[in-house]
Image 1 (cartoon, helix red, strand yellow):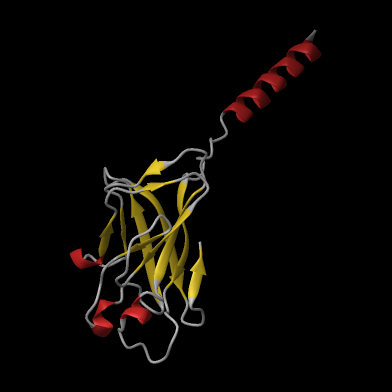
Image 2 (spheres, helix red, strand yellow; image 1 turned 180 degrees about the vertical axis):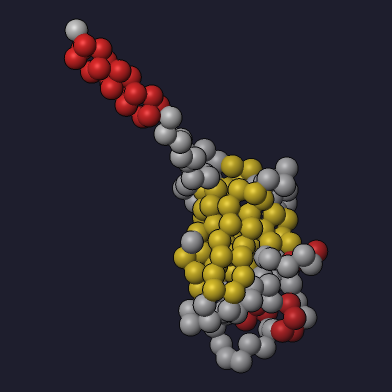
Length: 156
């Protein structure tokens, strides 16, 4: 009888320990997947083609389309001109959108930050920075950091 009581107590203790394990949060359905922070060409000259060589990619890994209206992408600075805000835009399930720094015509797969003005128009630092993706309510959805001048991009 004593053995059965000890065994029961051990099973209950293990069961409680398993139940007490932390639940891991699922990855967000919308994620930053890549930052190309060192646009092709040397030296960087701030021309539109060079600005558009710098971009961030965002993917909807979920099974439902997500409206990104009012969502923002920004870097580490607190400068208001380093914030891209999505207008009316829906990212379909399994699809990726590329947000390029320069100017161009927005499509279902590419959006443009609309920056110009030479070398000061670049968003992403060439050695270290962080991209932040926030929903329309301002809640952080995802982020991706890099710290390397030896690469041109970071896969998140």
